[in-house]
Image 1 (tube, rainbow, N blue to C red):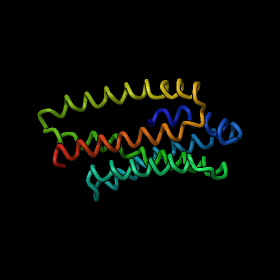
Image 2 (cartoon, rainbow, N blue to C red; image 1 turned 180 degrees about the vertical axis):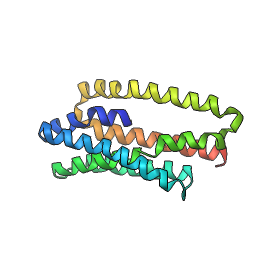
Image 3 (cartoon, one colour; image 1 turned 135 degrees about the horizontal axis):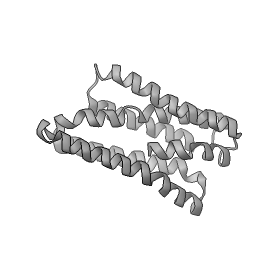
Image 4 (cartoon, rainbow, N blue to C red; image 1 turned 30 degrees about the vertical axis):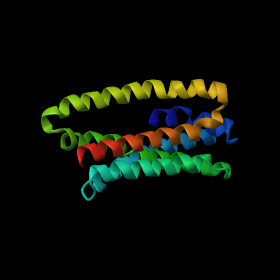
Length: 167
């Protein structure tokens, strides 16, 4: 979902929100700045918050960014939504990797982290392409709903794993 937002965000801002290509490029730059700033800040936040809380917080902030992108607000809010999306996505993957030894045991953590990384790469490869197919058939305006559905799926899966692992 993170890759789909970064790869399709500018096209959405131009085609669905009517921004100029330059403004859309700035919006996607703010998305990546949000990820960078969010990863920096989540490193400090991890000293006071558990990884599970950072994962949940990130997913909820991401969902808020997707909703903000979906709302029929002035086009500038679409740029702000991209920054919020990036900020929200930032702590999720690093926190999931950090949480792995606690959830699955130190002896299994290398194998599980390998699986997590493989799934991340598969998702990075196929989710933007899947959205491209959907956008060709249903329109690029579907991006916020696609992102929100992806974040909701991540949130449900993360909470299920947290419940099953008792952490």
